[in-house]
Amino acid sequence: MTKRSRTLVSVAILLAASLIGLDAYRRWHDSAAGGRDALLAAMPADASAVVFADLADLRRSSFAAEFYNWIPKNTADADYAQFLRETGFDYERDLDRAAIAVIKSGNGTKLFALAEGRFDRKKIEAYAAKSGARENRGGREIFSVPLSDARKISFTFLSKDKIAFTDESDLADLLGPVPASPDVREWRERFTREAGSPIFAVIRQDAGSGNPLASQAPGGFQSPQLSALLDQLQWITLAGKPLDNALRIVAEGECTSEQATRQLADFLNGILVMARVGLNGPQTRQQLDPRIRDAYLELIKGADISRLDRGDTKSVRVVFDVTPKILEAALVAAPTAPAVPDPATAKQAPAAKTKPRKPKKN
Image 1 (cartoon, rainbow, N blue to C red):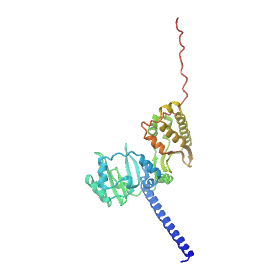
Image 2: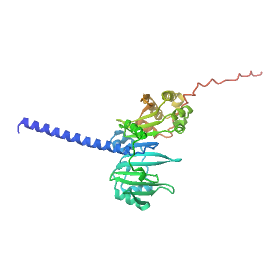
Image 3: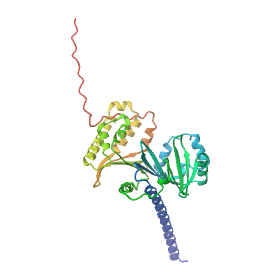
Image 4: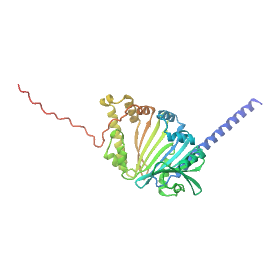
């Protein structure tokens, strides 16, 4: 074989290997995207929130390893340890993707979820049959397992690698195709926006839910103005995307009022300014652990607040990064956030008045 022939053969081999690699990546990518879209398309249109996680994607990120090392390794309780032994299923290793819908039901909520991963169907069904019931509906075997005296969970295998489950009374009603509707289009529009995030939550908000959201703010911070502004948001999304050494969090509040989004953006920017001032104050420097203070400052300095005009709706977007420094600070004893005053009501405290001293009698 001549030198020219050997060169041509080498180029052909490299080209073939490249094409095989590209085809394998395309098949893997299409499979992952197809699984994601299929899970989200099955979420009910009357849900109040949908949470999605692509754990297979997250496991490939360097920050995921940092996060898993950070999570405290507690001993599994007896029930879960027995579940692991009898089914061989470990969600940290075997669960690839999951979509969970929260559905309002009377004064409470119900859950419906789809999960993809590696399941030993015979072992899982045998484990469920020991303490639960089995029935055949619509050609599917549905297992019901009690969680407590008043609650149970029902599940069925849709395929060898996909399970549907719910704590609703009738799982079969949730397995049918979701008919096209304006609600479905609104959900899918927001799912599409989060296509680049392996983990996200989309919340469709009713009026009056701002108070609970504001009451859970860190450091005991409460604000009637913040609560009122949050009440005007129709949609709230939270998404996480791994970077090289951080997890970028993008939170977005969406409504039809431009005035409400402008006021909310101004309010949140005011909180950042006052938090930065408070963290640099002499009292905070003395009382707060330096590692926690540095982590808070890193979080605040990297945060970005902006407004988006989507035509029919307006949005406020908050972006910040969770870094290893912040994870480390969370492990420090008593990581209490510094108290931040309400920007709407914060005023400079008047100087204390002192009574004139009476002259001493000789």
